[in-house]
Length: 122
Image 1 (tube, one colour):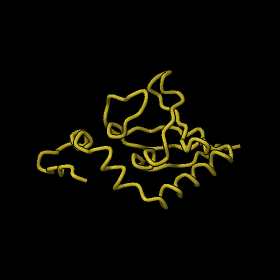
Image 2 (spheres, rainbow, N blue to C red):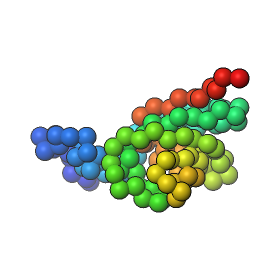
Image 3 (cartoon, helix red, strand yellow):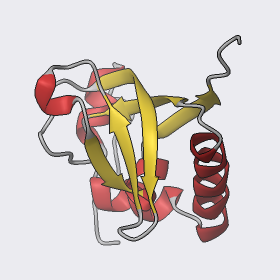
């Protein structure tokens, strides 16, 4: 992609690693159409059944609005799917500006570490 390689000898912490990763490269490497489709289908199935999804991601590489200054791991809650705009709707505990955020599925999958359906007891 014409981007420089990450020198692993200069990257000695998770924060430095995330700071060295390029969003375009990460998205291109991570995004495989079948993986995105599977992620979207599974998440939307749970959401449509009324079950929120705990979404564990790493932040600081994929740009979000409003921006998040810190790099690292975060747990979020996926609360919706918008098929018309091809976006995941999620909430973060960083304050009122982060209570309902949106991101396209390609970027969402690129930053995903894991996702777990929340099945509350009845």
